[in-house]
Image (cartoon, rainbow, N blue to C red; front, side, top):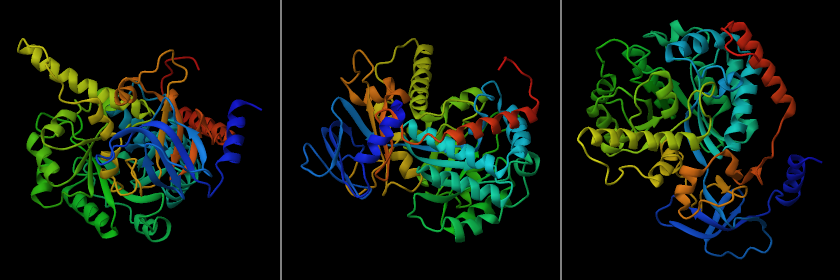
Length: 468
């Protein structure tokens, strides 16, 4: 029996339904100000965190040894496109214009409903393997209702917590993304009535709208009103890239029209004016930064520091999984170190050296956990190690290292963590990864996903830059 199968068999025999789980003597970074950080125990029962304390007696619980490990809330990835998982490795050298042409303008036409299922399912498993327990899946591949249903199936079958961001079809970029006059698909009403009816389920509904950069003001207003009529949050890409010398302050217009609010997420925002950022923050809007892809594709400089200067809290996403890192460790480091580099550069121009940093490791870990949960309207359920919340937890270890970087556990997570350090992941108390092994390894689905990706890329007839 191989190591993965052995671990899965052991977990199935130990962590049986209904049996409490005790994580013992971990260094807990709770992200809850009332609890703080401590070395202690966490008791999980019936999918929820029951108790957090220096020591807990639970003689009938299944025990996970947390000694010399760091326990954090599961990461919250507030922006990614899981449907592109089967295309991973093709877009690393694409500009944003390339992406619009090849991904949204060509590849999307090739996806069958089953392709969407495979990509979403495998991508969600990959997220959990990397310590992510919650995602906002920005699904703009909904060519038919069958595509939509299979995307939802992929999320539900994976076991991840997700907001399914109901988006556009991926078969006509001109129709949907160039000052579109086409309203959002009314199939979202069917999904709300018949598929994702509850806000208490593991997979809930959101709206992925074009926003004012890609649709007319009338369509944008209608999309926001549609989301609010369904009682769901919405997300939009804004202020991306350089298209002409004149910047159009769309968010300022939305604010003046009274359309901004805590139910709206803005992603990227690289060209937003400072007053627009302040207006959005004051309205309770969340702002997602996806630093790696923004630097790669020409979106502009990430606005981490500018949002913080306006009194807001950035949240993080990985974005285009066909292009850049799909893990939150990478995004945390890109976000914090680039912001430091920008601040340091400004000081250097004045002949000075930095005396302090304006963004710290704990700040960016909050962005990747509790702030992300708030952005998705899920902070009452996840985002911190708090009794009463659902048990979305990630346990990190450095067992393979010669020396564990744990003098400051927060810095260990942010500056020294990677997917290789993810020891255990649970979502709503259900183990998804244990002892560094994913407990779900669907061999046939992986093979089918690889074939789907090869077929889709072959249909695009892109120039080959390397032998495969």
